[in-house]
Amino acid sequence: MKSHRILISGAGIAGLALARCLQQLGIEHVIIEKNNQSNPSSSGIALPFNALQALRKMGLAEKILESAHQVNEIIYAKKNGRIISRASLLEAPLNQDKFVAMRRSKLHQILLDGIESHIHFGTTIQSAHSNDEGVDITCSNATLSGQYDAVVSAEGIHSTLRDQCFPNENSLLDHNISNWRFVIESPNHGLQPTYMLAQTELFLTYPIDTNSLYCYAHVYDDTEKFKNGSPQAHLRNLFGDFGGKVSSILDRLGDQPVICSRLRSVRNPCYAKGRIVFVGDAGSACSPLLQQGAASAFEDALCFAEQCHKHDMDTAILGYQKIRAPRVEWVVKTSDDPIKKMKMMANPVGASIRNMMIRRKGPLNVQGWKQLAID
Ligand SMILES: Cc1cc2nc3c(=O)[nH]c(=O)nc-3n(C[C@H](O)[C@H](O)[C@H](O)COP(=O)(O)OP(=O)(O)OC[C@H]3O[C@@H](n4cnc5c(N)ncnc54)[C@H](O)[C@@H]3O)c2cc1C
Image 1 (tube, protein in one colour):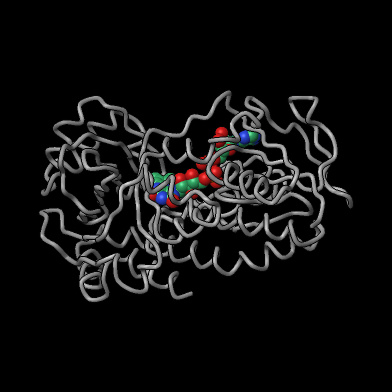
Image 2 (spheres, protein in one colour):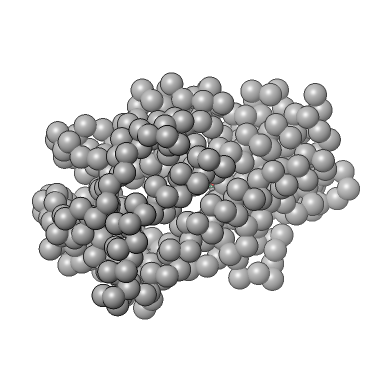
């Protein structure tokens, strides 16, 4: 076993997963987080089979299954509720592990359990200089300044370390899509995940327990006209005439908190620059079509920790990049390509061709998961 000292910047899904993986392997590390406490967004998260497989390797699958809701089927429907296509998640090759969904706060709590006291909250890197031996860090908490064998950016899509390492790149790609997310009580909803499609409008209801739904909605918005104003009003205007449970959900939404954002990707996925390493969204954020954000973060963490366990740091970083790049780049491309074509759905012909393809080949994300499962 090699001896390394690693600084992880960011205590989100990727940073916490990496800290746990390094801890399992007895590798010395420090984790810092810019916020003063852990504050995951109050939305939901879907975890496909490979997220569960990774969580199993981290020894967390059973805890997750106690808090999460298993889903068995994906349904794509038109906005009036008429089903376009449905696919079982219980059949090969997807039945390698469970598909679940849960509150983000619960996922964070499980990742935090046992390591929260080791996190240096309210702390950031002020300067980072790679050299032959590692990275020399100045930290806002001076006791953490000094030389590390590697520094890992787990800082999410807006990583400052990424911008510092690749200063000449316009690093984020905006997909011209505005989206909204919220969780709503819906007693005994009896639903499976349901994607309701109009032209560029999508409204997704995803059960996270028997009485609650995680809702995600988006629309093509190249002029950012939905950036300002009341998100609840935008949702009612755009989706108020949708069938199924959508209109009753929107009636009950009131002024409950809704998270609004734009869909963005890291333009060029990156893995490392010298001894500065990127995991999770910091290196490869992409659209959530395949719901691979957490799975990819877990897979990054497992891979980098294992490489550190086996090799000296330079070999570990090379190994990490070599192993992860093909899968990460496939996930990014498969997640982003349909999103890049979204503008074509503003035309009714484009939208009906898309629906015809879904009818013929099955739900888009299920097609992607099948590819991942046989990889
Ligand atoms: C609309 C939407 C829906 C999604 N749905 C799903 C889904 O259903 N399933 C799924 O798996 N994924 C989903 N994702 C993707 C998923 O949310 C991300 O992939 C995941 O949160 C990435 O985790 P992360 O730890 O890399 O980054 P983050 O969760 O962003 O965490 C980064 C952490 O670093 C901290 N930080 C940032 N900058 C610094 C700094 N300079 N110094 C110190 N700390 C810093 C932040 O405060 C934060 O705690 C979705 C994404 C979006 C946008």
